[in-house]
Image (tube, rainbow, N blue to C red):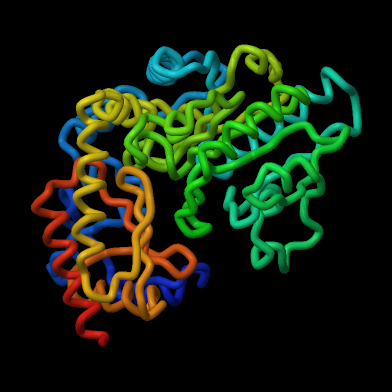
Amino acid sequence: MNTKELDKKYIMNTYGRYDVALKSGKGCTAYDEDGKKYIDVSSGIGVNSLGYCDEGWVEAVTNQAKTIQHMSNYFYSSEASKLAKTLCSITPFTKACFSNSGAEANECAIKIARKHSFDKYGEGRNEIITLKDSFHGRTVTTLSATGQDNFHNYFFPFTEGFKYAEADIDSVKGLVSSKTCAILIECVQGEGGVNIMDKSFVQALRKLCDENDITLIVDEVQTGVGRTGRLFCFENFDIVPDMITCAKGLGGGLPIGLCLCTEKLENVFTPSTHGSTFAANPVVCAGANYVISKISDESFLSEVNKKGAYLRDKLEKINGVKSTRGLGLMIGIELEKDNAHDIAVKCVENGLLIITAKNLLRMLPPLNISYEDIDEAVKILEKTIMEDK
C-alpha cells in the first residue's frame, strides 16, 4: 500500500485531505512522493514560520535532541528558562506557562482567569465573553469558547460559562455582568475569515476590562510570532492584554503552546493547579529559541510588512480576485466567484499549497518567503483562477 492507501485504512477520517502526500521540503518549497514541486503558502497553517528545514532551526533542534530529549517538569530545563526569559524581556509580560498546542494554551488562560477571579471574588464569577466567528481550539472547552454555532454540535454537554458577542463594544457591554471574569478575543480572526478587529473596539475592550476588573485575554495562536508584522498582533492595536496565548509559528515546526501573563496574574497557579507531561520539552524549546532569535529582529518584522503589502498588491491585480484583507503575511483573498475551496484544490494540482477560511482563500506563507516565491505563488494562483472561468 502507498501512503494514501495506508492513511485511509488506518487513520481516522478527521481531515478533508488534499490529494498530495508530501515527502520533503526546503524553504517555501515542498515535494511530494513523486517528486512534484509545490510552492507552499500555508506553512502547515502558520506553523513553519521559517519555512521547511531552516538550517539554523534544524541545527538547534538536532543538537538538543542529542543532548537530552525530554525531562519531567519536576526538574529545571535550561531551554525552557531561556525561552521564557527572552519572551518576558521583549514583551510586557512577566511569566510564562508552557503547553503543547494552541488549544491547550487557551485552556491554560481560561483556567488562570477563572482561578484569579475565584481567589479574589469567590464562586460564581466565572463567565467568559468571546466573539462570534472566533476560533479557540478543538478541546471540549475551547470549542465551547469558539463563537461559531457549527462547532457546537455532537459533543454534548459542552463546558458552561461562555457568552458570544458581536465585535461591537455595545454588544460586549450587554453581556457583561457580575458573573464575568474574562474577555477572550483574536485581534484578527483567522479561521473565522481573516476578520481584523477595529482598533477603537479593541481599545474600548481594554478600558471596559479595566473598569470592571475583567481579565483581557488575546488569542495569538495564529497571529503571534511575527505573523502580522509585529512580534505579537496586539501591538498593532496599542493595548497590553492581561494574558496572551501563542503556539503554531513559535515552535517553527514542532508542537508548542504558551501562555504569557502580566504581573497581576503571575502567581495565580501554584504547584499541582496545572501541569503537562510534555510542556516545555527541551527539543521544542530549542527550536522556539532559534525562531524567536530570528523573528524578533525589527528589520525582519519590517520585511514581513513589506512582503505582505507586495503580495496583496499582486493579488489584487488578478482578474477574479474581488478583494484582500489582512495584516503582515496573514492574508485572506475574496474571489469574485465565491469558490475558494474549489480553487484551493485546483491550486494543488498546479503546484501551489494554499488553504481556506470560511469563503476565502487564506495565505500564511513562511515569514522569510522570498519575493521570487511570492511571484511564483501569485502566478500559479492567477493561472488556476483563469482556468476556472
